[in-house]
Amino acid sequence: MTASAVVRSFAAVDLGATSGRVMIGRVGTDALDLELVTRFSNGPVQRADGLHWDFGALYEHVLDGLAEAVRREPTIESIGIDSWAVDYGLLHDGDLLAEPFHYRDDRTARGVEAVHAVVPFEELYRRNGLQFLPFNTLYQYRVDALLSDADTALLVPDLLAFLLTGRRVAERTNASTTGLLRVDDAQWDLELAERLGIPTGILPGLVDPGETIGRIRPELAARIARDLPVVAVASHDTASAVAAAPLSTPHAAYISCGTWGLVGLELTEPVVSDAARAANFTNELGVDGRIRFLHNVTGLWLLSETLREWEASDGAPIDLPTLLAEAAATAGAVPLFDANDSSLSAPGDMPARIGALLGDAAPSSRAAFVRTIVESIAQAFADAIADAATLAGRPVDSIHLVGGGSLNRLLCQATADRSGVPVIAGPVEATALGNVLVQARAAGAAPADLAGLRALVAATADVHRYDPR
View 1 (tube, rainbow, N blue to C red):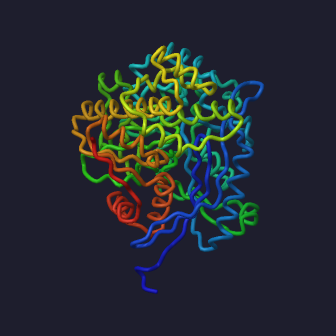
View 2 (spheres, rainbow, N blue to C red; view 1 turned 60 degrees about the vertical axis):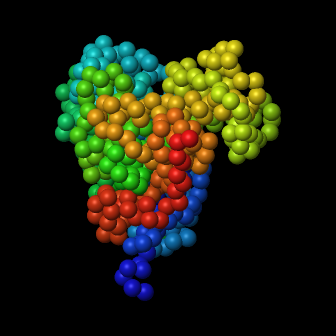
């Protein structure tokens, strides 16, 4: 086998707000593919004090998945972990004080009031560049009764890395979502933390994607049958997804679409103008210090929650591909609603809440109702793309839609139609690919620059183009 034919393997732990996966990524000069090892459900659990993550179960799923990955591919070289942003666990003397809260828990509203009473949002935006989201980490910290008992706070991927290795770090792309990282130099804003009553000692040292966090603890190495390093990847799942988005031109936009739709541009400098703040655009970090200038749009959450309600009512599963095909076949225009309306943010009876926004215009058939949902999401995507282009002073000539939403042909075509620019859909598993590529680059098994990583994705991924009609 020639050097160019060598394929090297890495394990990606990819955790989303509704499910998690462990995957094997294989990388070569002209090869990049993923093997799904295990998939498990992940979602909120109601406890006496609010909505939490079942973190104990999540950790066990990760360990079982890693053991199976090593059994299938003994040559795995390292482990990388990415997840959703903002949620965290508190430690004292290495012990987790409580299950991490879920970002949809209603305590966050009190945190917003408490933070803004001390530091107005206008000042926060100048300091951290983040859009207003009521569940951003600093709002959660402000109302966490256990914060004063903790010696460390770790976001979910960093918490898992700590349990695996014993080392406490904060990976920078995810840390940029907390509201406590300065937008100008990507360091902890200790002055802001002190003003908000957040103990600065709980903030761990920062690491960048590609740095080795540590080797897994001996007892865990025995459990998974391999002594492996854990490498920091772009641990915010959107940062990993954008790293693997095969952006085709300097004027390409991206949408990382799953439960949420993260819609925006990749920049080299943040945009913290009054107009960007008013439009609620965020400046989060990406791989190699890039800025993810984007807006959070409610994504396929609206559709999945609607299906969940209908299935509960029917007592039987619904075939989504069939329903989407029926939706695509509905004739004529459908009514739209604001996909970002705050009334749609919590779980429970989504069809009724969407119906309340639509009033008498609400479609009576399920197929038309689904088309209304998809077209409303697409309109929100198109609006966010237009806003990003205006705010950054950069025209957009294409949209790369990655993640699970790239499989939704109706959504991809509607986004192209409503934005007026082509949509290139895929890869589906962009987040896991970004995770694997950063590990591979750190091991010298992938191109050194971001353009090279994306070229490898473009050469190997299955993508589909949708032109505006």
